[in-house]
Image 1 (cartoon, rainbow, N blue to C red):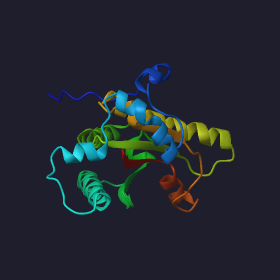
Image 2: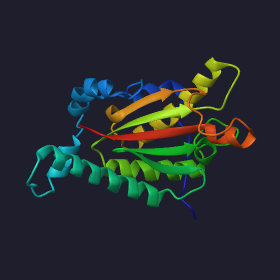
Image 3: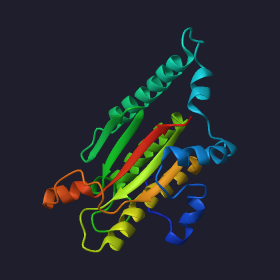
Image 4: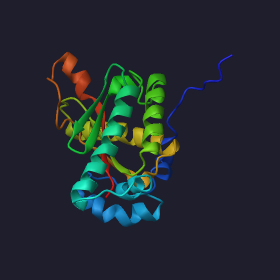
Length: 212
């Protein structure tokens, strides 16, 4: 007998309590600096403090050593995500020290209902567990749609996807002060706007950045 229960997003009117502490803006460097006191006050950790608790002191140039340690930390995070997320519609990429996870909408949400799917529940649970392990990071959760005539509708849909993922992570132990949540509508397409490309452009991107 299976004890599994399908996940459903909580009522929309309760989302604010699950996302308390999250920022609803782009995760710029300036925004991270401004949020740092709130993040630290909520128990957040800086990446070098987290690393150096279990690292022997290095000789040589401090900045070079610190950058090397951060790169190692983010590389381990990237590899764990990559190994755990070998599924259709999901990719893990590297951009400098940042790690980007692309989640095509149909890989994590129901086809005709705005809710997390059974496979999406498994995927987001896996991501949440890894992000709890690598907790000295900020996470931008950005929703995107395919090209739509109504730009306001596109923005609303993309924000809905991003918030649903944020709510899920908040429910599964991710410190919400790490989160930046934004809906970007049809901006930044990653595929052609044909029938197949549209499915790819409907997505949620997680950009994971070391907290400094």
